[in-house]
Image (tube, rainbow, N blue to C red; front, side, top):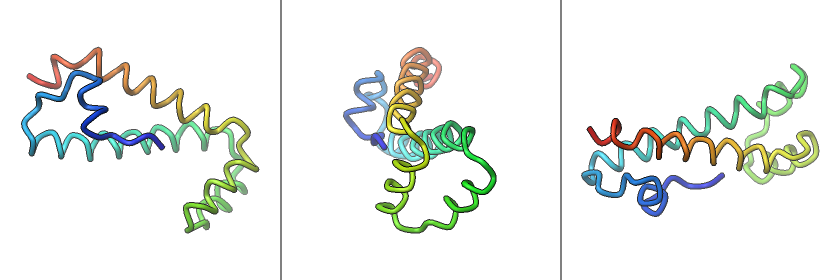
Length: 97
């Protein structure tokens, strides 16, 4: 998954945020992005697949499982990331206020 980092914050116009606030925002944004990606991917899974997926603990196994069970998941992740990034850019003024 793409990282919410200093470069990302600059790209969306939030680079000027105070350091402590920026760190908290990046953590919150990462969590939100993970939730959105999870929702997008899980929408196409059966209950059995969800149960199987939830039992995987190793990140390499997760990627392998997704490759096998969710064709095009990488594109879905990029799509969610792009949409999230666009939302932040559109709401930059409200976030900084």
